[in-house]
Image (cartoon, rainbow, N blue to C red; front, top):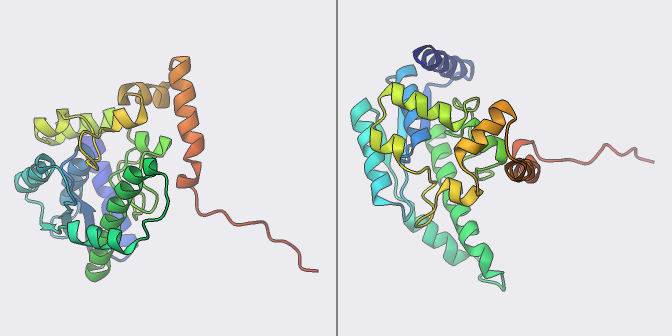
Length: 244
């Protein structure tokens, strides 16, 4: 695990130098992935790492966990509360005759996109790269918000499935309460990653790494991959039609 950590740390440094940037900025949510990214970034650029805590009607526990990680690993942070921006944008948007069932997801995605805007504002001001916290498991099935937490410059954990990230977190000394809590984007009360996907990370990781899964799991994962293919691709453009 230490060899893996050092390889990722070296890669982060290379990408930042290659982009002629001065450092990195990332969201620090209090979750497993962001905690691991935060520690790796701090190792890579001790004086050029900024973790941003961005509460938007967030869980108090998640905020406390983010602060705990920042203190333990001496990660510089900014706390930027987004409730006001979120409420103002909601008021500016048309109410319309929309399907009520779409409300929760639409508003949750808006929170994530506000965080992306915040990170890129800071990146522009500091000449930093925006570091994403997505892992291979989430990327494979599209469990991220397009132009939200998917809107980043680099993804240090992009080749690690969730179980590998958890193993790395234990090695790095991430607090036990963060490692063991149910993975959640924290976008609404009671929301969990596994509940939303309908499968466990253990089942997903096994399928991604070995190809082994029951028929129902296989069908579900393949369907999620197919539906989310657009998230992993650049925007589609039509063929170059000849002009007559």
